[in-house]
Image (cartoon, rainbow, N blue to C red; front, top):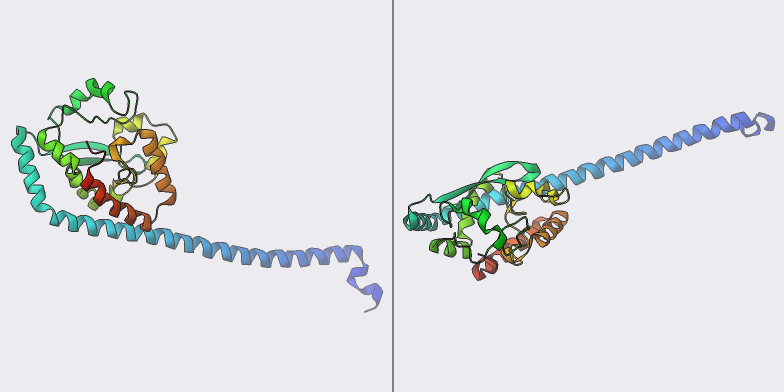
Length: 250
């Protein structure tokens, strides 16, 4: 091959050769990039789904074990509630879970049988403010004598272990709101519904009913953004002294 025959001496041949080299390089680089993205994607999915699976196994194991161990306590509370006013032992309410899914939500009844019908008149006296989405009242006249005891120790919430076993709730997560509360949510507030609700949450170990709605929302969103099994275990451990001290429970 003479110098004049070399491809680099012909402008059109030089352009063709450069395009060919570019395509080869780009194609090879693209394959490597796609391969890395592929493995990163599935490694991330494996971590996320694995964490979700472990969390679900933990939920079922703890909920079943706690339910069996607490059966004698359930029996005593049920008898005490029934003897107080002959009303129903459990109070059932519709709550909103992940992505707006509604589910039946049980509690040991701690109030008068007609408590819901009296709530409207008491709304202006809410400790969270009359215009707040949530309603909390330290000296709620609807609460019975046994109700004050079981609410102080959060015993009224224990029937929700059934919701954890069913999968409507988790041990840890934002508390499930009522349908009426969700109806007042803004679009930003609805981010609370991005995860399965929990039996306990980050604001329940930080003051419970003493924390106003907007601060509850901020804490819930912080939990959603940084949730992990480690954080769940920390919240579960902190729940024990929070329940025993009864701070913010009324």
